[in-house]
Amino acid sequence: MSLFSFLFPFKRRSSRRVVLKDAVQETRLFSTRVILGWMGMLLALSFIVVRLVYLQVVDHERYTTLSESNRLKILPIPPTRGFIFDRNGVLLAENRASYRLELIPERIPNLDETINDLRTLVHISEEDVTRFRQQMRRYRPFDPVPLRFRLTEDEVARFSVQSYRFKGVGIESDLSRYYPLHQSGAHIIGYVGRISEEELKVIDPSNYRGTNYIGKTGVEKSYERYLHGQVGYQEVETDVRGRVLRVLARKAPAPGKNLYLNIDMALQSFAEELIRDERAAIVAIDPQNGAVLALVSMPSYDLNLFVGGIDAKTYKELRDSPDRPLYNRAIRGQYPPGSTIKSFVGLAGLEYGIRTEHSRVWCSGAFQLKGQSHRYRDWKRSGHGSVNFHTAVEQSCDVYFYDLAHDLGIDRLHTFMTRFKFGQKTGIDLVGELSGLMPSREWKRRARKAAWYPGETVITGIGQGYMLATPLQLAVATATLSMHGQFLQPRVAFATEEASGHESEAIPAQQRDQVLLKEDNFWVQAILGMEAVIYGSRGTARKVARGAPYRFAGKTGTAQVFGIKQDERYNAARLDKRLHDHAWFVAFAPVEKPRIAIAVIVENGGGGSSTAAPIAREVMDFYLLNNPATLLSQPATTK
Image (tube, rainbow, N blue to C red; front, side):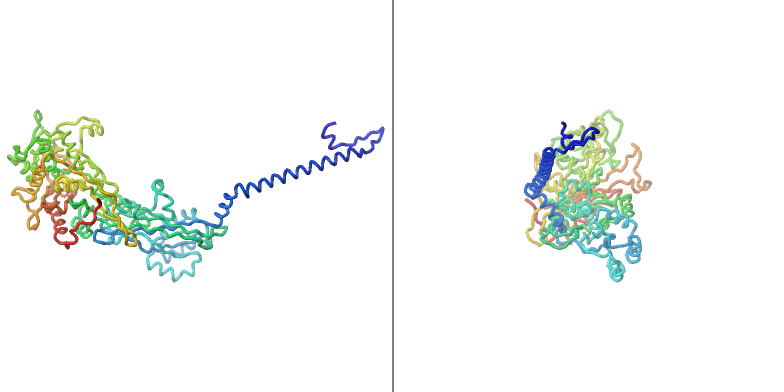
């Protein structure tokens, strides 16, 4: 008999006989069914008990945490950003109360109608509405969503009077970055902006919870880790929908540190005013400690335009302007340095023994390589006659340096010039510095897939050809020369300070180096040549020193923007302004104990002696003469 037949017997009808019930078999069947039923219930009960033990004992902590997470949440408290000051305590960047208009979607029956009604009281652009609708996707229905940032006081007042009409609409205040000097020092200070996806990959996301902004340019970016501070937290109890019911615990954020700069803002503003109508740059450095006193790039722009987001039209105007106001010419502008490097090329000749201070070269007005017909012209067509290193720098004789560069060769010239940071970054504490270009055989082979020619060495000797330098590089090189080879990494900032005003902290140590020459007299010869530029009877900038109560040394430079034919004369009057030569001037003062080294470039400004030199003289006068004595004292420096 099968099991099925045993458990579920069927009576068979038989026409022949009737089968009587078997009591024993039915009793056995009933008992079997009861036993199987109890076994099934015990098995199910065992499974439930095991599951309860697992949930209550084994996985207790996990589910307790999940349960508490539904009730308790950790919310970030963003820190207050540190202030920025100049060397004299002038406030350059602060945080000001800012008002924003917020809407709670679940409490507003008709969003479109409400926004249209609000436009009668507050200016709301289509960009604001678009951003609002995009943000709504990231917020919960009961969370306030910002519609307009940085409301004016008039807008706040108008809404406050009519606020009873707008259920679910309110005005909240917070702190936003503000730059009280607007355009002055824009390329040094920089600005903050919304955190991008690329920045999220490199920052600590836990320290930026609740923070929407980060330094984008200038010291705002370079010293972000000091200025930002440390995020705080508060533990809150919420309901099932996430609404905050009460605050259970709170850890206050650590505000960002205040930052003090070496910049003298009075000098900076004065220098900016001197070149306000030009495309130009000025860099002034204290040679004694590497402090950047002024770093000017004009034209400039208002930093406050970028706080909270700049509108597309204004940004396009700034970006597409032919004057490039967003471009930091001081550290990114790469120009042929022209005759400003002649003192350094002359030093190379002395160092390698190619020339002495008494060696003379005859300048007839042009230079030719042996076996070539091409004539490399001097700026003075009639020539300078017999010149040595001293008089060649004084009169800026091209032929002397054509000949010297050719005798040195590009290999030695490249090696020597890079010791003064030409073709290298100076290491200034600002993001975005470019390295310029000090050409070499290897560079041309790699970049141009071509061999180096002797004629290219010739024009490199007067700062033309492939060679490029930034105003910062020339200021640093001039400062190094004035200190007989002592190189100090240029620094914009010199100390940080806790927001409470205590525990001033120096910034990381600056790099120091020494350019060593075989004889210290070589430095003296180079400086004497630069002094003769200012005070010599045939000095190219002899007019600029009139009335100066201090003695200074300098070098003019004129950099060609485009080449002209062999026998063609340069005529600025026939050229577009943007094709005029760039005007350069470098200088340091006082000669006996330098307190300022300066580099000035005016794009398409013409001659260095007529355009750039007078600007440098006014800047030096302002710093050395017009400031109180306390402003000439050196700020704290790092060791």
